[in-house]
Image (cartoon, rainbow, N blue to C red; front, top):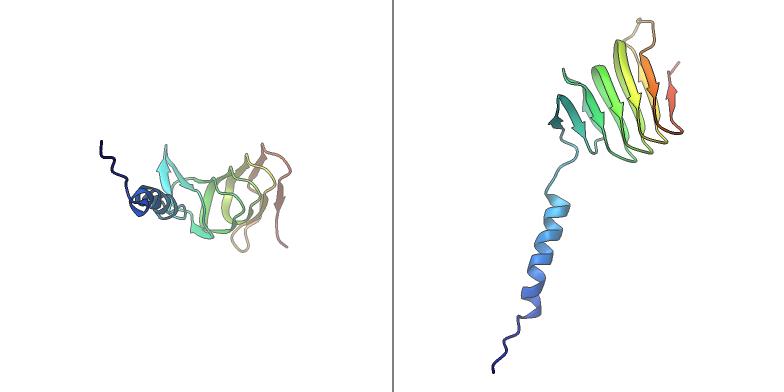
Length: 126
């Protein structure tokens, strides 16, 4: 009986294709809209729009610009700076996040700050 063997380089092609798709296939810096939220897996700079923002990434150094009315931080170990509108809401459900919030110049007040995670901090510069 004749046995044919697949050359080694032919066996590696499916593995190489899988690794490339995993590494190159999805851009977490672009938001995915899910149930009315802009969801980010990773980003270094984003702008708020009309939808609330959900941040799922870990170990981000992130600036969130625009007039944010609702932001949730679900990831861990992030350093985030957020520009909020008066009366906005920042909710943290992840752990070990440092969130610095800003209001427009000359505006007084504090956004609603909710910490449902562990070892998180809110900061107001100034």
